[in-house]
Length: 326
Image 1 (tube, rainbow, N blue to C red):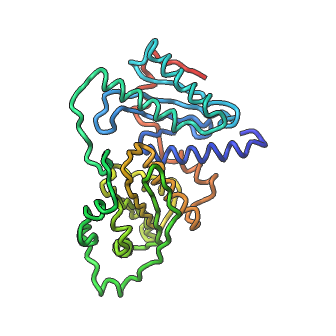
Image 2: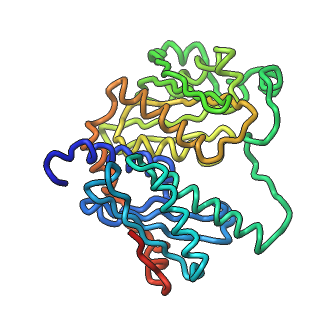
Image 3: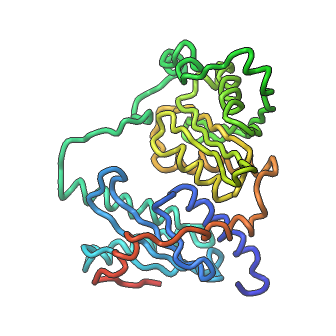
């Protein structure tokens, strides 16, 4: 990175952190120093029919005055279809000059793959088992859908003797994020044992508003000094893969002895992948606010550690018909 370009460097680091948090195992670090990454994109995460690997290199001038240099890797991507996709990505860049665009590129490619799947292989519309459905969900309906005793429904056994052994840690609440009538809010508590995790969840569910949330996604990481290992776990609470992505973000930021719960109140309008972005942004904001994270530079370096490019990326890169556009 050239001198005097610290602003671009920081923006790139923040975007890299966000992409890794949002896409999890779909995101692959090829060369951390050269800022080369791959993102595996498919029409359906659980049952992919069409898959493409987007390889990007971030030049020093990105996102200020230059676009990413990119490569589209897929054996089926040829001719006019490849040219059309390339034109679409370049249009997105032109419409967003100076802005971070990797997320927009990935979701544009995913839209193209979904359209291709629907056009070439029409079939029954099988819905995933998730809470995000295209229905109007008023507050009264959300409340009616909740179990009478959320703590009991989560199979937590909180006894008085347990409370005496471990103190309930303090709980902080983050600033809510609202998008298209959906609201996301993070809650954070320091924890040093699984009993405290249960106690924090039980305490949060005493709040009627939190108990009425469509999803309460959480993850925690506890460092065991004697074994020098982490005790960690996560929960989707009906939002498929959200807990794992939240835990992945906490691993990237290298936080310890803390749990984060993100409540999401669904407003009746589908958000698609944006919901994962909001969940992770809420979590990251409160972790930064409460000083659980390293400096942005250290967090960015951690992204490439212990993460090797997996076989899917190598396999796609070896396929013929790959073109580079810049």
